[in-house]
Amino acid sequence: MAKQFPHITDAHREFIARQHIFFTASAAEGTRVNLSPKPTNAFRVIGDNAVAYLDQTGSGNETAAHLLADGRLTIMFCAFDGAPLILRLYGRGKVLLRGSDGYARLLGDAFENQELPGARQIVTLDVDLVQTSCGFGVPLFDHRADRPTLDRWAEAKGEEGLREYHREKNAHSMDGLPTGILSGEKTPA
Image 1 (cartoon, rainbow, N blue to C red):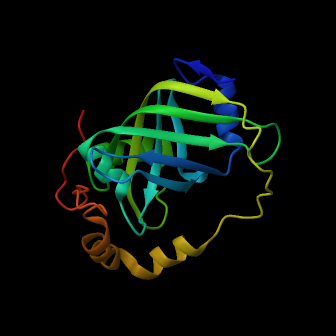
Image 2: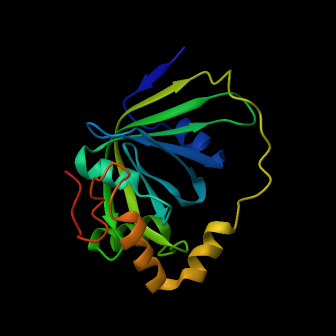
C-alpha cells in the first residue's frame, strides 16, 4: 500500500543513498511525457523538501523544456536489490544553467565544486509530496559498474564541441519547446 509523506525522512535519505539509478518524468501541455534514467552519483538531497541533480549533456533536453513551460517534475527511485521499495518525489522543478550564479552557488554547496564531464545544468526539485509503494513487481538486478561512455564522449567533445552540440541538439525539445539552454530563460518560480 502506498504511503505519503510531506517531506523526505531520514529513512528516505538512506534508501536514496543506496540506489544506483533514478528516473525523472516530466511533461508540458500538448507534449509527450519524457522519462529519463540518471545516475545517482549526481543526485543530492539538499533539504527536507529539496533535491538537486547535476545534469550531463544528453541527446535531448526534454526535462529543461518541460520545466520552462510547466514546472512539474517527478523523480522515482526503486530498489533493484535488497528489500523492495519504490520512492517518488513530486513537486516543481527549476533549471540552473551552467555559468549562472545559482548554478555556481549550488555546485559549491552540494557538489563540492565538482562538475561531471559534460555538465550542462543543475535541476532542482521543490518536493511537495513523497510517496512510497511496495515495489514487489520490480525485478532483482545486480549493479556491476557505471558506464564510462558518456564521460568519455563529453571529454572528447571539449567545451566548444559541447556548446555546438547544445545548439544543435539541446536547444529545443522534441515537440519544439525551447529549453532555455542558449537564451538563459529561467524556469517559472
